Image (tube, helix red, strand yellow):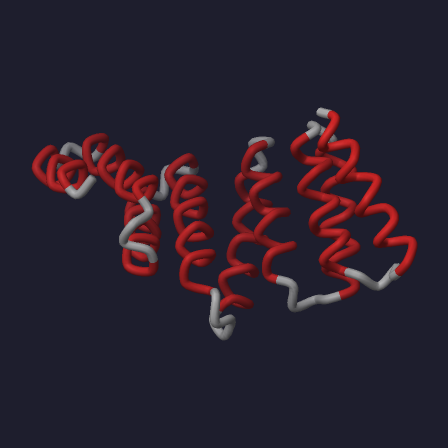
Length: 157
């Protein structure tokens, strides 16, 4: 926890030096989330979004916090916005794969199995080395009764 506290102090210092630094707010939000301070982390992501409405990572992180806290509908709003904003980002593919994978997890929890499957397939398309997407897709296929598809997915690992 000591490193988290030091990181928080550094981000607070960065924000003090440049209160318009959206990246510092986003990173501070990540540290606060790691420490279990969900509301404070959400406030940091909100500030990052206020300062830079095109900051896809702030939307992504906010969606992950909502997903982890069980607020799946709210998570979808922010994950979809992150995907919308990431389409032009040159580093989008890996991050978008993770967004889609997380979106697939959220959709699976909501019972929207087909759309979740599509999200896992997109995650694999954008990052064929993302083993988590293969595991999630295989588990979903197994749950849907497609044992052969699940087996093929797990064999990709």
